[in-house]
Image 1 (cartoon, rainbow, N blue to C red):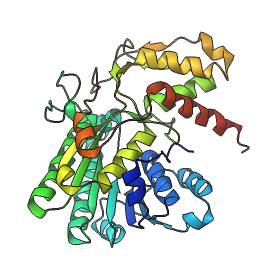
Image 2: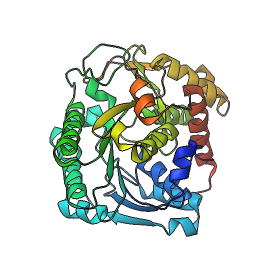
Image 3: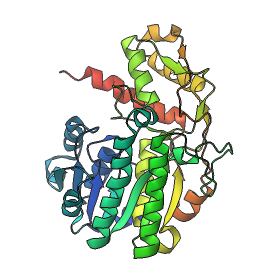
Image 4: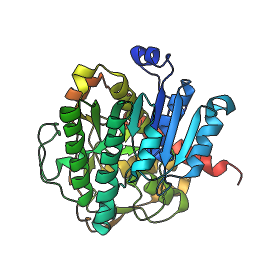
Length: 349
């Protein structure tokens, strides 16, 4: 079983027995590729929309190898930009559900490129909402972010209480949520937002200046490079394994309308862990393959602007309206993630 193919609750597994046509934006990305894989393994028809600005063809090649030629034949890739009304209309034509993952992520990236972040995350989402409204009016599930909680210090984070956004990325996700809620109220389009809390797992990119902490640290450990901690290591996050993010998307897409339309819910692992703990857990796991990693110490650098100090999700609403319950704690998720990164290095070429 791969990270993208969780054991699904019986109602969801039964619902997937009926063939549907799905649109996954950001299909070549981290979460998007896992969604494509899971849907194809359940014999669904999938359209993928991606411009490969952050996603990779390698991810799709990996999906193709895992699902087999017959199921891969049910996937149609459309290369295009979600800022294009024409691309969105074409991709959304005749679909039963949209899983909108395409975005420019990363707080640091948004601080350097605020206009592009806004254009992709806000305008792109509105273009897709409009295509859905004027098309087959599918259930519209979209990726939001825990960054919308901003400077509100309350823990755990509850959906009704938002602070002031601390970065252009956070502001773009908040604006996208507002737009989706308006489309539900004004046009009766069924939208559901998923506020992801630090999703990690196989296929997450470790390279580049905007890489997330888990893959970046794993690669640093494996390569013998410095493992950089921004701040004192006391910063905490609620890490969510990618299989649980996949499950949340399916629950949101297939659940009863009255319970979820127009809402946004937290999607997380349900536990808060410091960066110091994450460092220790990764060092422990990687030292099994690289004994020299067992003596590594973190390299501390200054806090980054725009970063939230602590983050933890309240999952009460997700349990109530989606039936969502995370299956992976951090230890189990890191076991699978580290194993994938290690195995990838063993593949010839």
